[in-house]
Length: 303
Ligand code: SF4
Image (cartoon, rainbow, N blue to C red; front, top):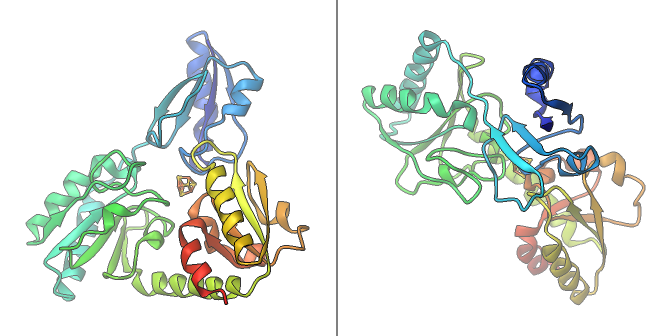
């Protein structure tokens, strides 16, 4: 079989080992060298060009059903943890939650820590906390699982606080600041509150919205990545902006990035229909970016 394998950035170091394993089984193997940020981003084009029979997508759970002539296999990556260190970390997180008098906590994690979630829950319960694990939106598979673009599992009405168990700030920064958010990072062995940082990001997005409300010309960003493409949303945004007397054009690319867009100088602001986390990077793009989900609010702000 001819197979193309795709790894997210953090797992590309494992690519050669996996290619050798599949070649030893008699397969012809290619590695996708395009950037890959999530399971929304399958290497369908590369697979078509090399006439692959199958794509193996490492590191993420299935994001959505994709109509594909090529077979698809998802191989999520699960972190192996040192449970002496991770257990102490969860106990420290529980003490920090007790300090703010939280009794009920929404536990969320990225799919890499799915196998640890049960143990984290048990330790928190042993420390006297009630743990709530909610199923997130359509793109998640498991209770408590969050994605950068889907933090529904963290929006639990009865919870007093949210505990994110996982590495890095990307996922927890997508959570709302309406409840205190604590990060327990088993890779750093560190627990810290991230609520103030989330609030700063929310303020920045609000600033972007206000700046965009004064713009006269809009670029509407569409990504061709299979889990991001939203042409109908882009067309609707164009119509609504034009009704308000604004000029708008739809910009289509696989990879949206500041370098590719920097010479479109006639646009004063962007409406983003692709990955909703792009709008956090207004400094690099040099222009306000408003997500399609916030278009209605933006239109209300326009005079
Ligand atoms: S849309 Fe963005 S946040 Fe969601 S999976 Fe894709 S890259 Fe990640």
